[in-house]
Amino acid sequence: GMEHHSNIVPWQMLCEQQGARLRVIPIDDRGEVDLDAYRELLTERTKLVALVHISNALGTINPVERMIDAAHDRGIPVLLDGAQAVPHQRVDVQALDADFYCFSGHKMFGPTGVGILYGKEAHLEVMPPYQGGGDMIERVTFERTTYDRLPHKFEAGTPHIAGGLGLAAAADFMTGLGHDAIQAHEDALLAYATDQLEAIDGLRLVGTATNKASVLSFVLDGVHPYDAGTLLDRHGIAVRTGHHCTQPLMDRFGLEGTIRASLALYNTREDVDALVDALHTLRSTMASTEETSTAPAPAVAVDETVEERMQEVIDEFTFLDDLNLRREHLMDLGAALPALDEQYRTDDYRIHGCQSKVWLHAEERDGRVRFQADSNAMITKGLIALLVRVLDGQPPQAILNADLDRFLEDIGMEHLISANRKNGLAAMIKQIKLYALALDNAASA
Image (cartoon, rainbow, N blue to C red; front, top):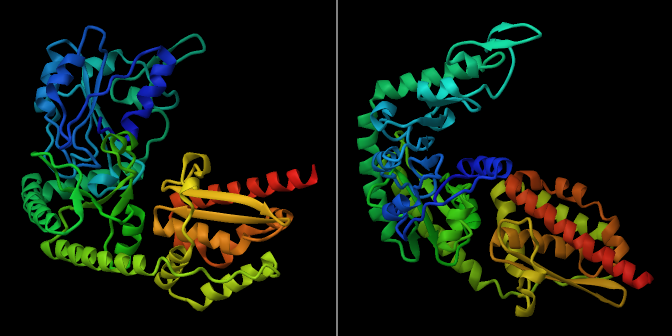
């Protein structure tokens, strides 16, 4: 399946509560739904079909009309996740005959934290409220409560008034431009961008459905998506990287993640050209980094304390007062990290909690902890290299007592990496300290 996690997790929770079973619609290598397999999945036991209209990770526009008709032939209601469809094309829920249709405001240039759930009146009438509070009642006594008419039955409490007004303004904005005009502009831009990206050596598009919206998801040979995102950002190119909240889909293609360029009504051919130029520059940058990746790591003085090493690194980062220069220095640290023995590049030595792969091996030598580490993403490799530089060769107690939070704050780490990478960095620190604790306990036994 190609569903966003938001159209997977709630159903898994419901399955756990009700004992239901979640069935997944298979897709092919182009990122298109297997319609024959879908029809076979529809049985007398099927209670609901929940389907993404347009894939956020692939851009695939699903044949929802045919899929709804097939479900309705068996009396099965259909919910469509339209978060990616509404900004890119005209959506007529009545023409689709969707039983439920939902989308979020921020995807259509409106505020965050507000959205729409459309449902057919017949379904909504028989559904109980999922929240209780003011404005959703007709009459309340201590013996019994009766609920107000639709849609108020589902609008408990003070509504998100500002968000609703903003969402209405966004809808008026898109209507004023014209949905057909928006789609025509984006379709032309997608065709142009697809041709340009396919001409780049080592670039592979992920999601090549015949019917697509303006999403370009791709991978680059030898470049981790996280590194690509960081380097493209230096050139003023904003992309999303990683699994895009579609981890089962990434597993289907055997990928950790992709680089995703999303085109919208405000983009131009010049924007696409800038992306292509930046990708060529990125390839050159990564090639030059690989050429220097065998450089020896800086010599580590074992008589230096953790605090002294921390101060050295803080001084280096303080000298680099530009954010991009600090990121480059972090990548240089990763490039200089000695290669990890293949015997340690296994799941037994992998640090879990990092979205990219990180391996760490530790052993005790003469009362000190020696580390070897590696990662398949250069930025992440720089992070583990930074920790190794500060902590390698130190006694276990010195590692356990090290104030790494203060150290990372002093070098401005919060501005250098994303929230996801911060979680990965925390996982690295936890594993390093666990190693130190185990070795300290072994020495004391």
